[in-house]
Image (cartoon, rainbow, N blue to C red; front, side, top):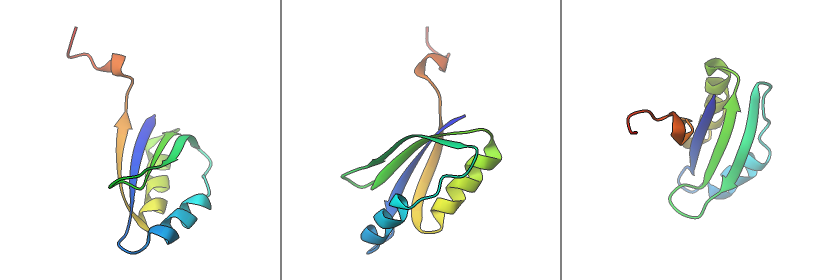
Amino acid sequence: MLLVTTIQAKEGRFEDTIRALKRLKIPEGIKIREFLGLFGETDAIIIFEAENEKKAVEFVCSLASCVTCKTSMALPIDEFKWTK
């Protein structure tokens, strides 16, 4: 399962957020594909694989304690079947 999480630092906590993200421990069952800092409204993005929904939720919840994040499931564009 492929997921994308966008991360936004809480007001006044940008430096603390970046430090915490650099020290982030990746749990077993999670594989990071990309972990990028961004310039703009969103401060970082993590594209990751999780072996199941439970692992994905645990990982995202560990992030959400110090940042505002949004997570979406990602699919290859060829898997979208509503067009020919």
